[in-house]
Image (cartoon, rainbow, N blue to C red; front, side, top):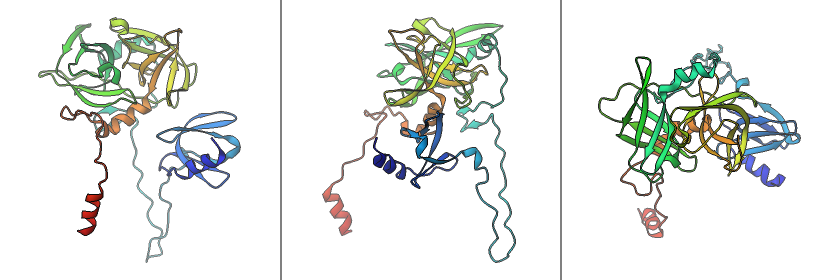
Length: 333
């Protein structure tokens, strides 16, 4: 990318409140989320793409954590007295977003995989269709769950196998009234909901963050590779910023196989940090997962990806092409 086109792209990018801001030496600025920092460059996610900015073009880095006070103290009009400082609202780390998913607390204790598997087992499910099977995980007690788009692609008949803990043992129960709530082919994500009558309150998992993760950190997956339900595999995080087909993925040595797709990738605090979705078939220990930040974005904007059985073009809605006749009528009116 030339310096000119790079500058134009930066100038076209709006500054986002609460985001990291990079001020450049040519007086331009760009806002987004810092994904990785290297000696020679910095990777910044601006929403629809990732920019790699050379260090020699950066004047200053302003992080979102450095801009806590959104409204400076100023003089109140007509009185000459200082205006009151804005009221600070304390946000709990383990909060609920629209009651659809929970953000995990930042200070959750580290545990062993053995302890976590026992704790999280009921929330990891198997997603079945006439064409195959995959994995998924439950987001809240009302039966909303995440999986991959390619697990349900082209399917309308979906059922979910859930493992309920009863008398110290996990018992499998099949739910067949499963609705597609939203899906995004390009992000390979799908939101489903179990709607069987008489369904109990479901156990769920919390969504964490990839930001505090370090390369080499131990992580693990639970899923149904090749139909072998409740299989646990452990590995390390190889990189947080592996770019494949224009998107960033988590790369891990955790074994990922067909059937793992849509299942959760956990850190050792029991928090979902990614959704496993692919591997390199001619190598070992080369698995990939969609970062949890992309999952949260999909869930927070699920209305834009909502599924409707009445729309044959799901999940895409096309606008009518412009018409000179309609434009002329509008002008005359």
